[in-house]
Length: 267
Image (cartoon, rainbow, N blue to C red):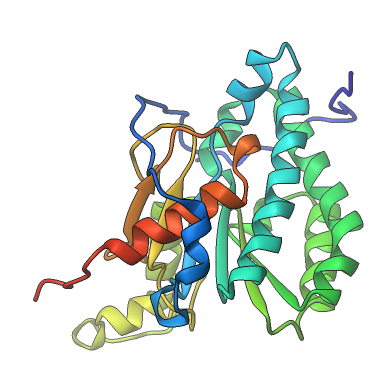
C-alpha cells in the first residue's frame, strides 16, 4: 500500500481555525443521459465543488487515508475532462482548507505530496487541453518549494482558454474576506466609497464571475467556509456520493438539477 511521505512537518499558520464536521444529506437524482439535451445557456458559467469523502471512501475499503486522497485525484481528472466536454468555462475545487491544518502531520504531508505530484504530472496535459490554472488561498503561508511549483503551473497554463480552473488551497472564505478588507484599507479607500464591487475586486477571485452552482459530495449539507461572498446566490446541490466515486453521471445529474431550477435573485 502507498504511504504518505513524512520528510518533515509542514509549518502551520498560527491562526489556522479548528476542524469541524457534521451530518449527512440527500443526493440529486436525474437521468444523466438527458444532460446531452442541455443547451449552452442552461449550463452554469462557474461551478464550485467541495470534494468531500476521500477518507470515508478509503476506510470503507480498508485502505489508508493517503490512498483515499490519491483516488480523489483521479476524480479531479474526470471532473476536469467532463467540464471541458460539457463546455463549462470555470471550475473551482476546494482542495485544502485552512481547517485541514488540524489534521495529522502524516495526512497534511500526504496532501502536499499529492499536490506536488499532480502539478508535476498534469501541467503539460492541462496546458494541452487549454486549461488555465489559478490557485486561491494564502499562498504566502505555504512552503517555498510548493509555492514555486504552483507559480510554475500557473505560468505555464496562463494561455488556456477552454476552462479556467481554480484550486482553493490553504483557503478559507472568512480568511479571504479578511484579506480583502486589509487590501481595501491598505489602499486608503475612503469608507464611504466601499461597496460590493470594491469588496469583490479585492477577493482572490477578482474579475471572475461568481459560482452559479455549488456541488458538495459526501452527504454533508453546509458551505464549510467555501467562497462565502461569491456563493451568495449559488444554487446548492448535495450528493451522498463520495468524491472518489464522483464521475460523469453524477456531474450530469448536478447539471440537470441546476437547469431545473428557477433563479429569481430576489425578484
